[in-house]
Image (cartoon, rainbow, N blue to C red; front, side, top):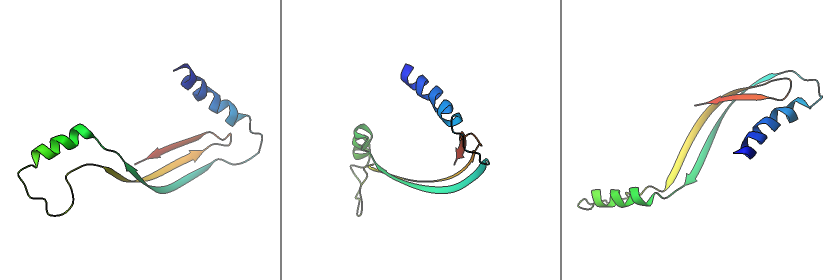
Length: 86
């Protein structure tokens, strides 16, 4: 926990040490993420729940995470950025 606090305090110090003169600016963007996971207890429960049904295509297991996001941010003149996403 001490390392995390140190890192969070160190980031603004490094950002403020940049001496370039520049303007703050807004950022808009979009992104996509793809990931994998396998929640064994939940998949076992789903198998038990759908045991009497006929699954013709696909599977009842959870194993993939797909996600999209839209974000907006602002970066100050001293390289400190703020970002919100949906």
